[in-house]
Amino acid sequence: MKIELIKKEREKLLENLPLRGEPDSPSFKYYTSIKEDEILPLYRTDLKKCAGMQTRYTLHNGSPCRFLGSEKFQYGSILEHEDEIDAELFFPKSDNKLEILNQVKFKDGMFLKIPSNFASDKLYEIISTNEENHVSRHYMEIGDNTQVSFIVNYIISSNTTVSNSSVIKLGENSNLTLYLLEDSSLSSFNNLNLHVFMDRYSTLKIFHLSVYGQKDITKIIMNHRDQYSDSNYFGSAIGKKTNHLDLEVLSNHQKPMERNNINFKGILGNKSSIIFRGNIKINEESKGTESFLMANLLLLSKEAVGNAIPTLEIYNGNVRSKHGETVSSIPEEQILYLESRGIETKEAKKLILEGFIYPIIEPVPDNIKEKYLSLVDEIVE
Image (cartoon, rainbow, N blue to C red; front, side, top):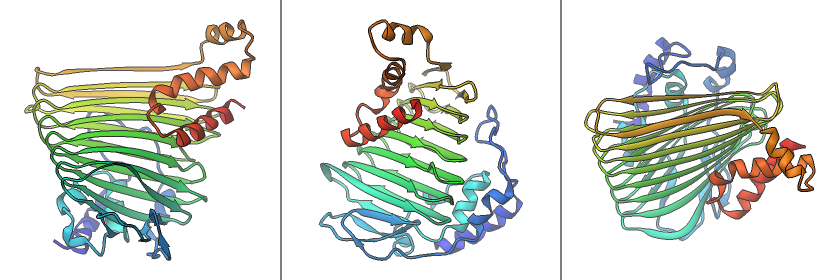
């Protein structure tokens, strides 16, 4: 079915959906209020093709630029490759209006296909720059028996309203490492969705580093579609000023012997706020599955607000699953201990914060790690 036909079908659904309908889990509630005028710019975006040629995979306001490179990847726009897209995965069913709005109003996006039996130690980079209101939708397909690593860098450089949604299809016995870097600190409203569909024996690692904006709503869904698939999410977010992040990470298990681990750490300065919602769903057929969830939020001021909300939906007894959440400030005894060793208070706080998030960012490339740690120093200042 052509993309435009599906978009028209979803447009009928969009008209009848409330702004915030029922969430995926009956145990969840929506804690972030959204007003219609905040998302109105998403109804009015235009298609602007990316001009120029690039030596990296580059998107500008959601449209892919022409790529000059030697890799045997298929790369281009969604509109150019719509016959090669798995439409059922590209348009997942949802009663979330922000998701359906993205499906209906997107003008273009990136198509990237990595062939089967491909393996490389190279770290490929996707740069997504955003300076205007826009809606985009992206599709990445990774073939069977493939090993590949990507950095995806979302940069919002102005006060804009943006909706980005990406779908990744991970083939059988394939391995994907994804460094998802998100700097939306200048945005007024940012909605990011990532859907990963995993076939059997596939392995996924996501390292998600975020500096969020005035109002960010992010949803990451790891769909385990077949047995022995293994996913790991390691996330860190830094909040400044009065910025707000609503982050949901969902691991959906459907077949036997699947594995998952979710680990998130948030640092909140000034009057910033975070709502982290972790959801593990293990269906009746997913026996022998192991899935774990941990979230830790650290408040640096009395005005900062943090909420960590776990949900476990388990429909069979032959599983291993547990969760743990903490919301706290920097322990005074840790600061006193470092001060007693001759370290100044400000430097002591920096060391504690760096130690707090280091388990998350340790595998990240050094240049990115150093830049992210400098943001921790900025918050302490």
